[in-house]
Length: 597
Image (cartoon, rainbow, N blue to C red; front, side):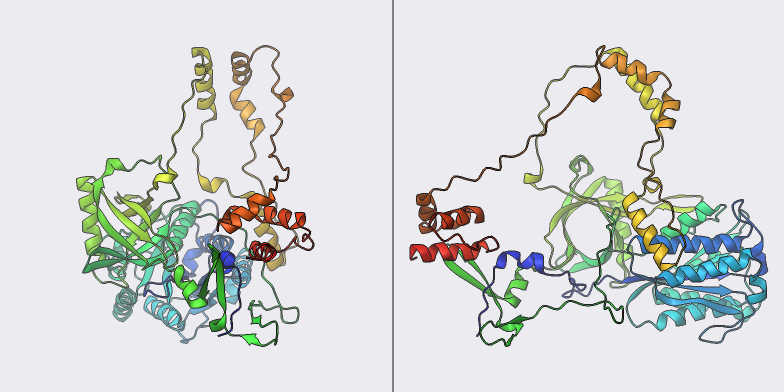
């Protein structure tokens, strides 16, 4: 076997993330697929909102904002748009009065441009001439939606969202009603989520859509949301639906040796990063994939992966691994959530925060009956005020963590579900992650200072919402990308909402700010004149002792030596040329060669 020795230290950092991290498990992450059905009949041109002159225009703008948000958040998902109630029949099944505005494809600039074109046609009164108005069959619309999903062979998290302000059955024909109910039953069996955005304060769900939604949602804990009365409610409703179906992964929840259910894992908070640069071909502008190949230095022949060996020197001995063995080192076991026992809820201290919490929800796709056991466990945990203690391994290549499952009951408002039922996954800290805090004595503030501070806090207090403070760096980045993709003449101005509004602060505080400064700081104190000299680390070169280096290497403790120390040692013995980019393992080899070891 040919041996190509490399340093094993950087192996795991050089490995690219594999899309199939759960390859050893049947539980896999699925890409989202959203199909928007828009009732485009003449009734939708009446306005139910003060912000827009027609409900159809509000729906299209809501869909546009939802698609932009998914693109900006880096969501890889499919999206399609179908208009219902036109005089055209532009669809794959040639059904009457149904127009496929946008095929089910990966989200991109073409989706935004298509919706923008329809919005411009409506605002310029060209829509009626191009599309017209007519009645349509809801059974046909749902049948076409399922046919559209069936054309995609890959596993997808499928969702259909219908926008309408008509609370009665679409048609009064008995056959159409039966076909709509049959389609709803088929959607439930094929795990296709179906939701209706009910537009208008007086929308009566009980007339028709309540039964349709109950048939399409087989789970017992489903709550039908109420109608929306403004655009903000509509956008919030749509965003909660298209994101609620996007999970990080699906894993088994192991209760005992011979019993387990299936759950989906969602992260409540996720950091959005600027997308990485992608290499493109100059000729075709297609994405290039990087592939690393190794060649033997003597013959120049290609070295197969099975003949590549990684090596690490430990105690003067080279430990060798082939590529399959090295990949096996990172396999930490099966990806699962395993129950260890129960503890009182009081043992979970929220100040021991390690990382953002996750959220688990039952999954019926891989294991039938998961919802029944999950709901029973949730109710008993709330009644007994206990938390299940578990071990969580999200991927076969990630380390396990101890977690506490905090039961969350369902609360709903007039707009539907606000907080869904499920368990919040609270990551428990290890011992080394806990630190003691030395409470040093400080000068206590006077009563006058405390009262002034309380008045300032009361004046400056406001209701915090994270969505009001978008990341200005990401916003500027995506504004530039959007301008290029949509061929806009100007880039959208980016307002940095994280920057303090000093005019508003001054108007709210009035003279309280000056009174507080006088009460806290002594007369004549100016904070601007206080300077702080930053302390920099000592960058002086370490003192090299030839005897110490030789002694450590002969004792097999070369791990204590840094690359800088080894370079300085070789330079002191007259072998210091061309060592700036040499790895530590090669430096150790040169030192051993010099010492005849």
